[in-house]
Image 1: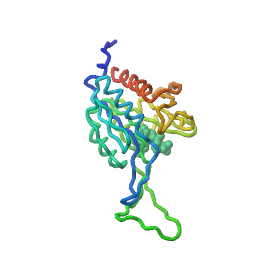
Image 2: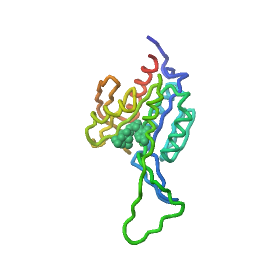
Image 3: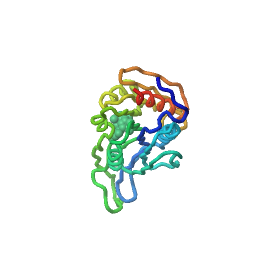
Image 4: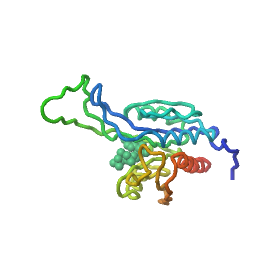
Length: 224
Ligand code: CTP
Ligand code: CA
């Protein structure tokens, strides 16, 4: 067994974390996004940095400051921006933790001028964004890959499908129907499911505590 001094367990390891929402422009003044605030991902980045890792944080727009101690901060807007930044930083990463809430769709055409209102409704056609995590799963190799699942129903079944489809080491499944879980709160209620199908249910805990649980698991996997 390895023994490390506190704060040294991840010395020399490169950890890539994505956080926050992506936003997709409709026109120069409007966009589509989601309720992610970035808290969970920022807590993970901070926890990894505290253990000595070189942390790259790729973040959608948030209202919080990047944690101190990280090595690199890349701010992105759209899913395509995030995909580019992730791919550029993938090779040197030992572990990738994808806590970002990525927009699955983007407007097919982005109007170059502000859309003027007219009588009647407005239909905006959306097209699919790439699934960044699924693409990472295909080129993963021996890297540690961690995903999140945000669900309002069939939590375990949906999370299980995602872990397989995206070739993850483990997935943090978030039950959005529970009070004190999910977006814009300081706590979370999750189950962690690993590759073998083992499910660990956690009680409500702070996002900082959960970040440490996640980094503990990543640390163990990196020592294998
Ligand atoms: N993810 C991603 N790229 C996308 C969509 C999701 O990298 N275009 C990642 C998220 O960062 C998260 C995981 O995939 O770690 C699961 O995201 P989630 O939205 O729960 O699942 P989806 O696969 O998008 O499925 P759905 O939204 O239909 O439930
Ligand atoms: Ca999604």
